[in-house]
Amino acid sequence: NNQIILSDSDGNRQVFKVLNNFNILAIDYINAEKGLIFIATDPQNEERTNLYYAKIDDDSAELAATLIAENVNSFDINDLTNQVVFIKNTGDSQTIRTWNTSASTSNGIATGNYNSARFTPNGERIVFTQSAPDSDNRTESIWLMDVNGENALQLTAPLNINSEIICHPYKSVLFFSVEKSSDSISAADEHTLSQTYQLTYKID
Image (cartoon, rainbow, N blue to C red; front, side):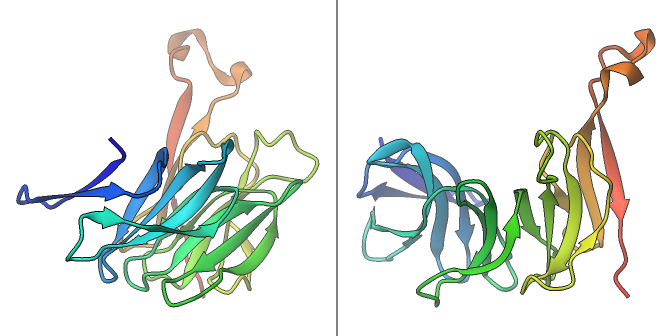
């Protein structure tokens, strides 16, 4: 019904009607700003997915969304800084960009072949996955960089990553799953198609 429902752990629910007819694919909430960030298909072009922001008005049950960026495939919010990081497709490559509710435009911090980007718990760094320019995009390496795009550090060799990169909420630890290659699957574990890894990193 083109609605967004905000609920808390006590069972309280608020129902908001979105003024635009969006097909929402992913959504998150900025608690301090009382705002919603979401990816939705473009009402004029269903093949394109855009990033939007909607501020909640206590006196209204309607939400008017503002376009942040077009051609976006993933995003993450840091709860400490209320900053948003997202990946924008720009044709043959992607850009990692950051945005906050006080900015009129987003800020590009890196350009390459990226598949995901997430904040570390303190919001000072960004974990991202990157494919080699000449690869088939099936293998990605995990990297870490400062929130301004500087001091990029490669954490892993290229891997067949088949999950989101999950950051531990307060430790320098990452979790992710890797698809096993067909030649490494034995008859005994032929149903084990992927393995989950924990990676602990330290920045001096």
